[in-house]
Length: 185
Image (cartoon, rainbow, N blue to C red; front, side, top):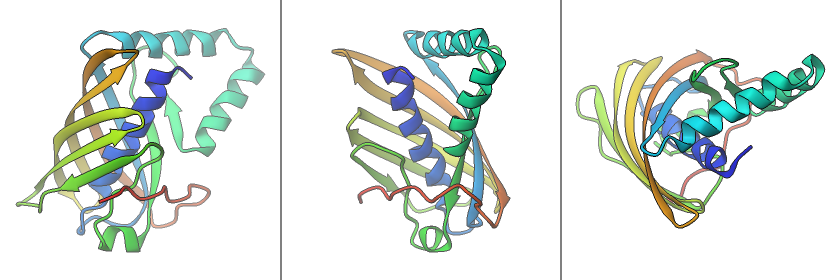
């Protein structure tokens, strides 16, 4: 997977899990669907390249790649610029402590107290160098939507992107999906 996509994966889990961390949401397995749009178009081009590479694989190779990603809770649309979906396990303790989970990188996250059905979040990561802020809107204990603006540096160039996410609770049991590490406060 290209470096830009790996950085996006880190951001995806950071932001998605932040929504799951709200105290009124249910712990357990969450599915987060994310659509990204970058100012340069690099993200979209990288996703299209990856989809072309997967389409060119034999059915056996493609299934092996999809199975490998699925074990990590990741699914990427097979055709067109569809959303990336991931599955995140949020434990009861994580939800009660309002802790934000991430997959990789050295990140610090902050949440403002929830006002009504909204919460503002921000984060800064040093590896990969990324920062962002946005707002989450909670529709129920089992669903939320989020819009984020993310800035990153890659190969000496600044990149900005917007991310629209939808989170939905799937079940109380996480199955094979393990809880991710916690962000630093």
